[in-house]
Amino acid sequence: MRTLQIFAVTVAISVISSSGAFAQSRTVAITVDDAPYAGGPYPHDEYIRNSGRAKSDNAKLLHAFQAHQVPVTAFVVQGNVELLGPDGTAILKNWIKHGFDLGNHTYSHPDINNLSIDQIEDEIMRGESGIAPLMQEAGRTTRFFRFPMDHTGDTKAKHDALAAFLAQHGYRSALCTIDSSDYIFNSAYVKMLAKKDAPSQERLRHDYLAYTSVEIDYYAGLNKQVFGYEPPEVMVLHDNRLNAEMIDQVLAIFEQKNYKFVSLETAQSDPAYQTADTDVTRFGPMWGYRWARERGVKVNGSLETEPPKWISDYAKPFSQDSE
Ligand SMILES: [Zn+2]
Image (cartoon, rainbow, N blue to C red; front, side, top):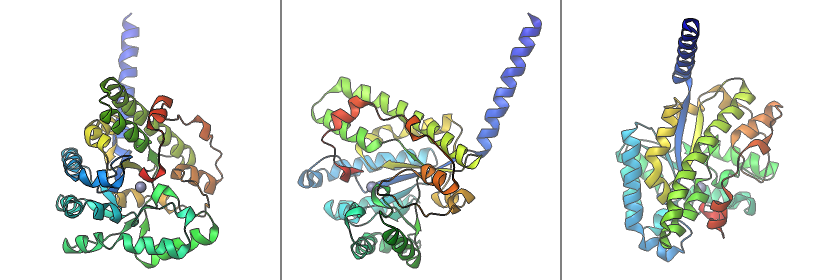
């Protein structure tokens, strides 16, 4: 009995020390796309009428990011800023005032698979027309660009031309390694709110956190398989109603898994992020899948869990525009 007790204590100590090792090394950068507000599947006129909601939801996000000391980069869709009018700019100024970074996410969030190289370059330039002066006023520069839907060029010519264009304009492409399909959960959630379907709201909030946890573990495992160590992760979230309510708990999941929050710049300074980028795809896979192809590592994407079917069904018809 006594031997058993000693054995149990030894096991407990070794578990603690191995999770302690994780605490030193696991890092994640949090990014928030479609700022100043992704809203939901609203028609645009209703979206404009909800600028009060956009302001209060952004205030909730900023409060949580400050409380958890998260150096966030928000990726701005300039067209959404203009739809919200002066409130759109006021929201962005608030992000900057609190020390957060803004990145370029195009003017109108198009699917670049459907655009010519010239049209995409125009989207990128118009995408920075609002944020570049705001950042400059604060003595900062806009350094990151993120492709809508993570589509990075469906032909080699497009992919390579855009990579060169971004570099010429001082941009780094913002990569992302973990996605929780939060935009699908949000689409379902705003419908539930409109229908005053409280039991489904409760169930969705629970399932969203559970799925987020599953996806964090899945992608951490995938990236470790590709590199042999856990590189810094980059989490992609969206500026929406659901995250305004849940962000505190989403951040707590990372904390429980011993992640330390770092800036996007710090995350992308890891050698993993210097991996060659020659992958041409019309889809928007997380970067672990792209890195696996670049490095010739065989991974099995079918092991990834899909969002719960009842959520996807509730969200239908779902528009990719809200991604
Ligand atoms: Zn987006």
